[in-house]
Length: 468
Ligand SMILES: NC(=O)C1=CN([C@@H]2O[C@H](COP(=O)(O)OP(=O)(O)OC[C@H]3O[C@@H](n4cnc5c(N)ncnc54)[C@H](O)[C@@H]3O)[C@@H](O)[C@H]2O)C=CC1
Ligand SMILES: O=C(O)CCC(=O)C(=O)O
Image (tube, rainbow, N blue to C red; front, side, top):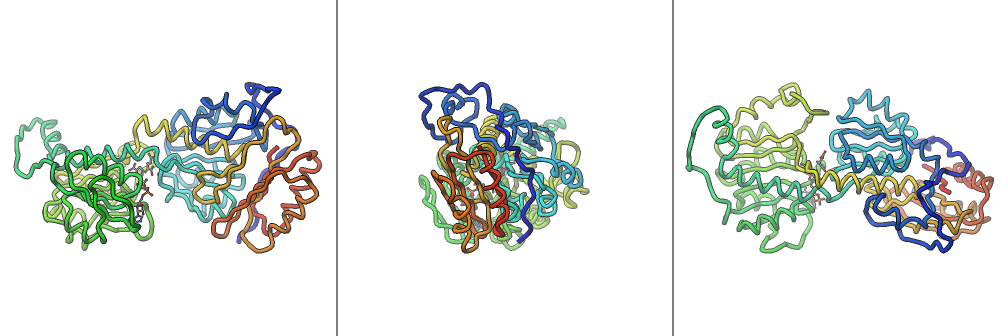
């Protein structure tokens, strides 16, 4: 275990409370909304006490990779300091910036490795404004008491729709015909151009995206089969097959929707291309590491694979520009020279609808975590929810104690809290890490300081936060 993470100490002064919150004499408890924008739910939450560990303007947030305006507005609306960048940052600049911030918001490009995170001395929480969280060292973050949130399905439909477009575009060689005509060449052909009706779509990974795609493909008259490591209910007329090999031997179109894990690295390589049907098609909108690209190039040159659509690559540039070259990936030129291959710059989730929804969902989760300590939806910490304190409870404090999951901790924590009136307490663990939240009533600022100092002194401590 690493040393407890030093964090900025909150001031014991009363936190700033948004003046737009009205105080009703009949204020009652309202549950926090599940996932809605802060602005839209402000009226609902009016009676809730806004717990804040610092004056809001002390919270520093770094947003990279063009996080949507919806998310930026929610975070700025809280009074936090928000620094926004359109692209990702190179590692040295990232390390420099991350030292100073309490929150970082990223998408799929920014790699938050242990090397980067160990410099992030004040970091409380990471928001992945996307589905994938493979770009973050989740275990290391948890061990530092840094929560990670994502948006698990707000862009699933966008990816599924892109894949449907690609299935038809590949079957009809649309990319090639369009490119030819852009160059002035009229090339009207029907050879090896097909309808998709009656063809078999093989979905690898039948999760949020795979199952959405299943519905759409079914509606177009395709036969859908899928392979997944877990047994999952088939939607419509889809059918689960027992192995990847069985799927590859039967599918006319193979589409990949698995996460990046050690098991999915080069999941489609030379052997798997051999197992595919002659003249079949491959689509990858999952992660670049899932396909062995040199093996794909060979399979396409041999005619085994009749077409491919790739949205993701092992190395992707930090921002937009003329970067898709051999400097980035050694096979880039060869790939670009192939026929019937659609190459897109990781745009599966890039629609207005998806980006707006993600901005709201992740920013809301960040605000709930910063202001209330609620971990619902966290991908690396136990999920803990506790009702908001209300304005009727002015002298209450919320204690959050993130600790190593070792015997005897609860007894020691309760020895410290035991002198006070603990109204509510919840604790849960995930692997080596446990998260305890307790609301304590009738506490004075000096009590809060004492509780905090005592919890900080326990050997199991990873991070203590007191919100009031
Ligand atoms: N191109 C883009 O812009 C986007 C790409 N993605 C990528 O798509 C991936 C899938 O997204 P979702 O469907 O939302 O994830 P999900 O978690 O809902 O589904 C993934 C499925 O893959 C299965 N799986 C995991 N390992 C497997 C293996 N070795 N073999 C077979 N099945 C396996 C899981 O059991 C699960 O059912 C994400 O992890 C992300 O990397 C997601 C959104 C946008
Ligand atoms: O839109 C993005 O930046 C990333 C999309 C993606 O790959 C994801 O959501 O996992």
